[in-house]
Image (tube, rainbow, N blue to C red; front, side, top):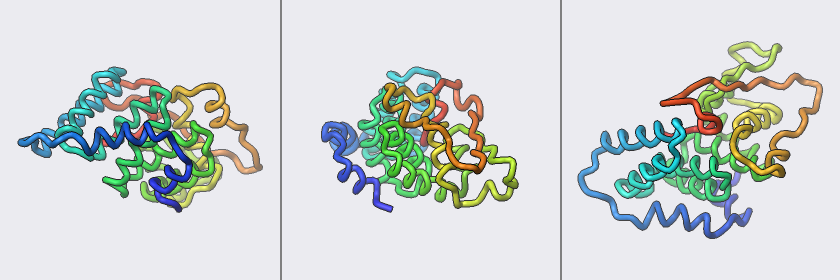
Length: 227
């Protein structure tokens, strides 16, 4: 699988989006005296604001976190989420790309990036990234939990099978459609994420797992927030 960086260059996303992420993550000097515990509290506060629908305040907190810790993958991931919720998937992708440069092991970032690509109609690339995210998460059930979803599998599937690292193409696409369903998108993007299911095998079921954090806000609760 191509790296997220290679994919972004090949797809030719807007240069301005890349600069938006790069300027925040590398040009601001670190503030002395911020302990890991203080940075963690700052991140948790920003996530709580985002999940309660206070996007502008959450953005200020994550930008502040970047000023304390340039390149922090939590701040970059969560800023990407805020842009995705504003229907700015290209900008979100730039933030996710930089977050993966700082933390290439986090399954949730792969899943968020795949969701953004799905909204842009980049289904094949989204499928590759989602499959990698599911593998890193340890299976479809764990991946669903990262996105605030509940995986119910199919009637033919045992609970043990639901924890497998392998995931079929249809399962990947159903996961991404569930995650993308409530993220703002124009009609062309929305149509690209919701094609009718084809084939004889029953589709797996992915449902909202309910409230997370301070409150359950549509869209925000169906993204992975890095803490």
